[in-house]
Image (cartoon, rainbow, N blue to C red; front, side):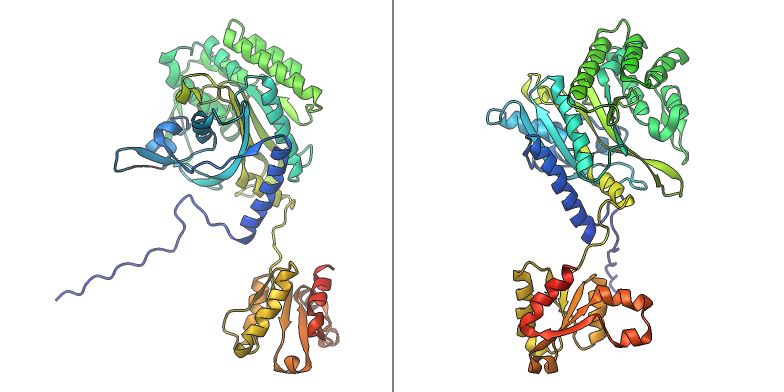
Length: 491
């Protein structure tokens, strides 16, 4: 008789394109999001938490990675035949929320939201299928003042979390200008929609592929380092020249950039409208004190999502970091957004203007850590060691006293037989203090308080005589335990 096959053990590994978040990953992110929420709230935006799951129909087909299965989303079919998907951003769900609740919401409606999104994309270094976004949007106004305000708020947000002025720049462009350029290049009309999509995605990859790579995608196509071939837009040399000229239109002064853009879209009404909107936004920002040291007009910014209809913007960090290959590069983009006047119309049939921005939370957090602008090591809890299992109630009383005073603390819950292991545990927890009360201490009414941070520091340089004095451990009366812990923590 054959032996039954054993069920193989599941592999203990994170799914491809996903990651786990521990300790400071979570607490640093929460601290940063709290700072961002403070700025958004100060600007008058209200919090919103929408469903992580939407119908595929409600999400729409706006992702740039259209060649992937399910067009870039994680989707499944319900028993009743409906297709559902995890949200791929926070903007498409907002359009549904506004359309559903518009009679109960103020107009314009200003909201911010924070949470994870999911994209069924090819993972790579630093590119995950689940990541956090932090959005702010204004729905219900066509005023360029809303776009200018979003850019100003983004500038204030970066500075609020620790990015200094001069270490970032917010770049603004207008999709209407790009549409005008495409019109001049002969790419107008419904029959050219596919080519326009390829051009849009190609321009959006300028910082990653460089001018030569973009030029290849405007033409026949491009083969990447892995050998994969991406089909291009099939433009001729003269058409490609017009698009490349658009990306190269930035000048030293904003007025000169606008003048060059006006030349490029000559003969296109939609292009001229986009240039006029850029001029208005620039004037509003200048009046509010947001000059070119923080916000500039840059035609190379187009944004990859297909629902943008007007102004688009992107925040880029300009300081240098080391990439995975050890090369010195600029950190790059951490936020972006734009105007999407047709997104709510899909639900209501009526045009509802809207604009907003999305911050890549993990990217921004990585930038703050790379420049030591946020703590990378969190102080652990005070650890109350266990010298006698039978006296667990005494130790719980100690930890309760510390917690009631607002001090993070815990009782050691492992096997207390080996005291050295308890101190190793405290070290792994990055505990600042260990509290010891054995039978002798209990009888004398005292506790031993071990300053673990000071002890580690002394151990690095102390002589034998200095170490023998054990200056990092204190014996105090039991009723003075809390005061001594507070004194050490406040040093």
